[in-house]
Length: 287
Image (tube, rainbow, N blue to C red; front, top):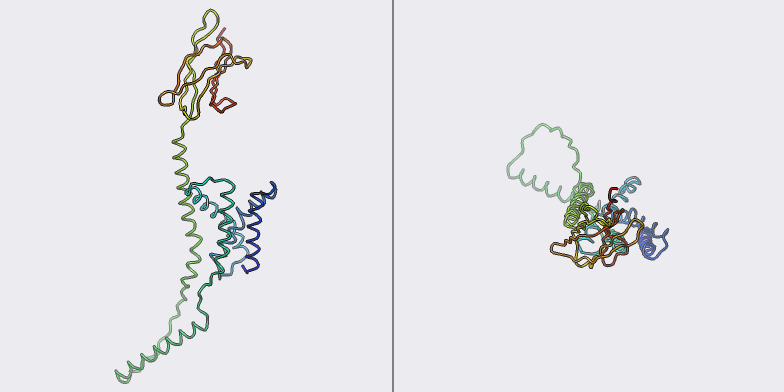
C-alpha cells in the first residue's frame, strides 16, 4: 500500500467512525460494515506482509478474515478492561487498530541489498581461499585427486519467508484461545445469575361464597429490585387485590391468597415495572 492509499484508508476509517457515531442509519450501517469487515483487515495485511507482493485473491481473502480476527481480539481486550461492549467501544477499537496498522509500514524495514549480499559473499570466498593456501603451504604439495561430481541441493527457503507464512496460522491460536476463554467466562457468569420464579400450589376447595385459598411462592427475589408487589386479576382483567411482597431469607416469599372460582391471574411486579415480571394463571374451579 503506497502513501496515497494509506491516507485514503485512514480517511475512510475516520469517515466510518463519524458515520457510525453520528450519522443516519444507512451511513451507520455502511460505516460499520467497513470497520467490521474491510478496513482493519486491509491495514493489518499491509502491516504483516509488507515487502511481499500479494495477489488480488490473497488480499480479498485476508481482508475479511483478519478483520474478523480484529473484532474477536478487540472484543476480548475491551471485555477484560471492564468496558461495555457497545457501539462506541467497537467503533473506537476497530478504527484504532486500523490507524495503528497503517503506521507500521512507515517504519523502515532492514533488508540487505543485492550489492551488500554480493560483497559479503566475496569476502567469505576470499577468506576461504586464504585459509586453503595457508593449509596447502604447511602440508606440502597436495595429492592429485579425481574430480568430484557436484551434488545439487535444493535451496533452503529463507527464514523470513517461513515466518511470514506462519504468521496467519499463529494468529489463529490467540483468537481461538480468547474466544474459548470468553465463552467459558460468559457461561460461568450465566450459571451464577439469579433467576426469579413465581409458582402456585393447587387451589383448595371453594367455600360457600366460591372463594378458594391458594399458596403462592416466589424465589430468587433481589432486595435491590424491590419493593415487589403481587396483584390478583379476575377473568375480565380487573384487579381484585394487591399485596406488597417482603423479601425473606434467601430471597423467598410465600403467602396464602384468596381467589374467586373463575380463572385468575397472579402477577409479580418489581418496583420499577409497569408490566408483570412473572405471572401464574389459575384455572377456574370445576363446576
